[in-house]
Length: 115
Image (cartoon, rainbow, N blue to C red):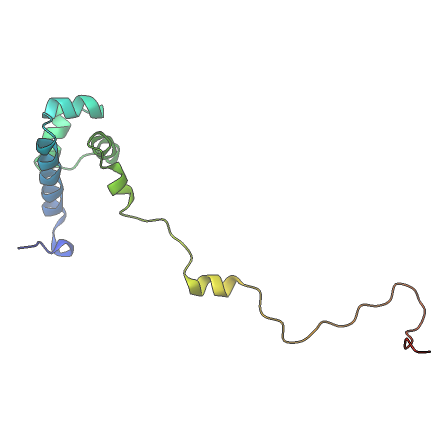
């Protein structure tokens, strides 16, 4: 049965994430000590994280980088691009008529070309 993530408490979400990291570490056949060393964090940090305790964001980034999953974290909040409506609103308004004729540079009055 799939877990409904929006309904998870903070503690439940931490335990779920920690368990997923543990499963990934084991699938890659890496010990907690090796992961800690590769990540630059303490082994106790890895132990706490896998049990569902909170760790610092920088530690999470280091652990995910070590496991080759940092890009997945970065994809959680994708780059914000303007919507088509926002782009449309930024465009200059369309012209509905021509602008007034520019004044002649010399001070002579305007004449028809056939005079």
